Image (tube, rainbow, N blue to C red):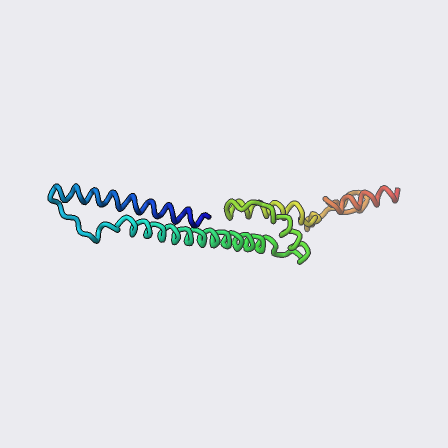
Length: 162
């Protein structure tokens, strides 16, 4: 049904264009202006050319969109891979699943979001390392004065000994 509609519309356009061109030719003839016969079918040729160009444009646009999506996927994977360095395989898979729903606006914003997710889910609690001073002094009881975690242990030991 649609094919018939298109054929009828195309036929009507052709008839209208031919009628217009023939009347225009008559006006030109009356005014002593000559129009070559080969120029009468110019409208049909141009409409076919426009249709071909539109088809080519749609094809190229579709390919461009596909390539853009593929590039985004590759950039996402590269950023996730970079952020996952030093993590175990299970943690890498967990990170991938956590960031799968994050929108990819730009590389910088996405990498910041991935880093935030990584920090919030995969941070390791590292004990504070206390630097030991070389010139440690002893107090009146013969115990060395320390600071940090060791000081807490020593104070707990002193309480239990008393």
